[in-house]
Image (cartoon, rainbow, N blue to C red; front, top):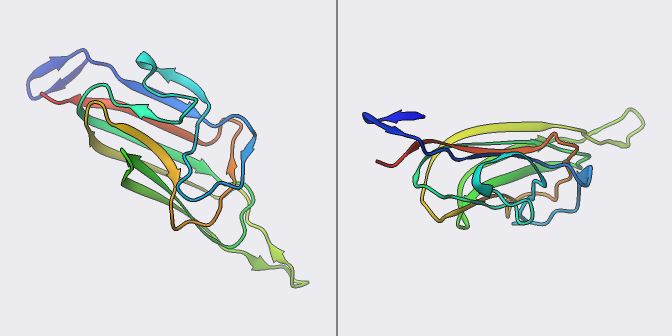
Length: 158
């Protein structure tokens, strides 16, 4: 139960999803949705492992978190966005810098990661998902349960 503005609510909404298959998602294009294909918790099936979309059942303040581990990435910044109905709410930057080895060959960066946690007001009926930003280099995401997308209702609207 959540207490908010003197009211008690028994509304419970939340999911925790991870990327399992394939072990890596590669060659992702700009604005491509990241589909986290395994759920640990999914109250009332609010998250779809087929589309990667969280459908908001109750208007209110939500905690949303994203954790991404990269696979091999060449030089460039990788950006992901959390969007609501196609509108960016926040983004995540994973900076990948390729250095040269002593023999002059590029050294590939492996498994850089980033985590962010936000509080967003989300509206009933809206759809929320994670996507590759339009200004990002093409990423490879590490799966095997390590990259995750989570959300839960903190306070419903009064």
